[in-house]
Image 1: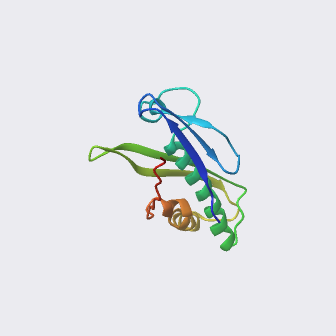
Image 2: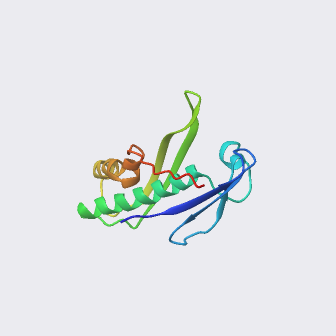
Image 3: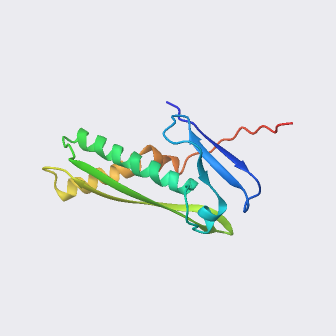
Length: 143
């Protein structure tokens, strides 16, 4: 299974503008820019970190539900919020953390089992593992 998205950036870092679109068409040409990403500017658009947060929240919710099912539980609902932090580390902007906040209604589960399954889902979620993954790059200079 492979998923793709395309980002196009025009202009310099601070005065430029970007647009991001996933191949699925779930959204299209969503804007992003320096002000929104690094200065908290208001207005439409997103940031790469917000997209990572959405992916992590969705991935964790699914992983948690899967692990619950393996243990014989079916959640009525799982709600997860991910907060991805971008901050300077050694002078470079760095995604330093992704904090998950989850609440769920699960009939028949006790707190110890809930905590055990949540910890396993946090460690096993593919996006959790991505955040420590090897990154590769193929770069083409157009002439």
